[in-house]
Picture (tube, rainbow, N blue to C red):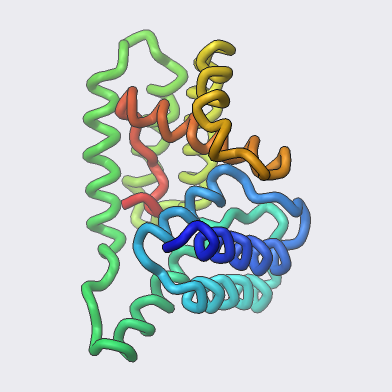
Length: 210
């Protein structure tokens, strides 16, 4: 995907999501990461828009609020729309991993991480213990898992020094050129968390990532 096409992809998804959700009118780093995952997996723009529409139509039917939702809430509907699109276009493709398989993968990664964490790191250990409990339930609460991921992100952000943050901004200077302040800040935060998780081998607990 060219840079122009990529920008149009992100902007179109953001416009539709924010239009449907309402305030706050700004994507979070997690929302940007969700779009990046769809782009990485080659999900067509039309399929994403269709999935977002289905997700919000379902919420409206159940009279639920929308303002606190993240884009990952739409992922299951986007995946369903993609599977139907693939069936229509090419007679079917490999379906997304079933929930049970995702839960197993998530628990495996959490167990590995917990074993490698220092015994005194109660902040992260308690969050992963809570995630394990949620994942052990018959129907894991994905919204609660997303909130735990947000808390893990907050812990990791808090452990980044001012010099490390400044260094990252210098590295991303060319990439951020021309972006507005809010978009640039979101990009830096997303990169910061991704880098911290990779370096420390900290897994996500949300099933979206499996």
